[in-house]
Image 1: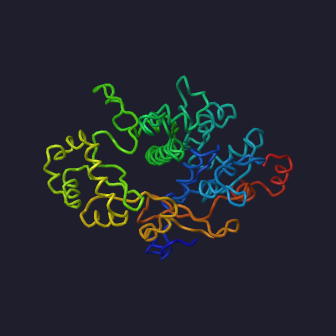
Image 2: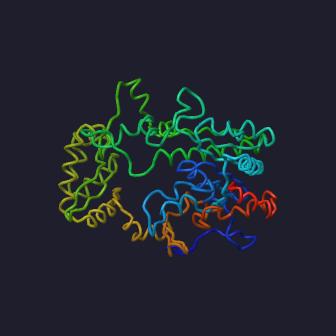
Image 3: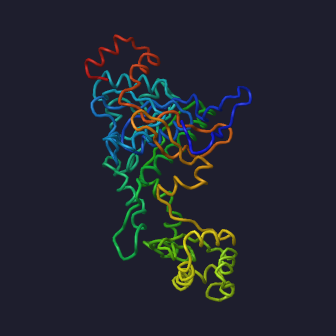
Length: 414
């Protein structure tokens, strides 16, 4: 692995070797495909968990084909499958389900994102597996959850984002609902799934018992909608699309600069706005009754935004940012990938790392977050080839003989 700055991982004082990830020794079995389940397992793999990913032997996870490509290879797959071991296994066959059952039997956590009811039909649901492995934790990710009248429906992240309230809030007020440029519903659900798994691990430490972590997409989106529900019920206020601003919060917007760029300035607190007013050479604005308080600035947001924009438009983006930094006003550029790669702060913190890979040469990607001072996570390898670890896992972990593995392969089970 190479990175954009020196390796600053914390070493174990007893061994002088880099400390193991916080989840080292935790075994995770990942079933399912696409993004939410695999990203949930990726988060745990990044922090040291041993993740075995089951894939269909003929097609593999569709993430191997999705997204932008280079040399006909997905640029998404190496990230979402990093630090995992790929085992091919046809869960539609009795022999494939037996392999999955055995892998679940020695796992701490199973992550799955099939439609509810699928694992029950296969005899791989938590209730069945827990009869032999009561400490098993199963993260079940779905569109609508494992219960309720919609549980059986197919649920993609886009639908969960819409039902959870996000889509109604994204975009300009005079246009139909928009979307974020990333699969936010999937990744939010994955994060809640990983959080639930870690909470369940602590519960198991105290009780010895596993449990089901039921993470639905629509509820994961709903969870981050702040006070949207009580605003409607108790104040009769309906949040809606407001573009780049939040109602009642000013100045906090994207402002044009004289070189054709733009910067984001967030100076909505009273003390910060006073600093902004001084930076603009307009200290009197901080005492103007239209702008002296948070509520007043929110009520006169358009007027205030025009004043700030008139000032930023007279300077280059770099000049605006430098000047506001000197005055202690939060402001920042709006980055694309190329700006992230060039930024010295990103480099100093190794926010982006680059790994040598025989398929791509150097493969750059985001690092492991969050950062743990005593047991940091690490990217050990990129997404594997389909079935790259099948023989290794079946023989070393489950005790299959090489001959048995060859027979399973000949029967298209693996």
